[in-house]
Length: 139
Image (cartoon, rainbow, N blue to C red):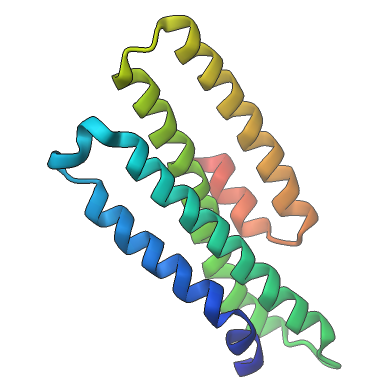
């Protein structure tokens, strides 16, 4: 549905800009600043979630929402949301590991990341974004 795309265009554009910035920050020159890459992935995650929520709200107001539109429009973007969510946590853990903060902190961040992944996966299911939850769990 074109309306669902229009409703989520702003957040979708912001997600793409954040993703492009991640590409620019995940380079050899920036490996010492891995927090920057993790921040760009987190921004992408937040923007994608906002885009999906906007599209979902629009589709919920349709008198006859198309399952085909949801499958081909919301599904792939949700899959990307789940992948980016996992990548954010991986980059965060890589930063903590490379920063040399200490084994105890690294272990704590690892455990908190697993808890965050579980909470996010459950939240995505509650928000009717099963593809995001599946991608996050798989990753």
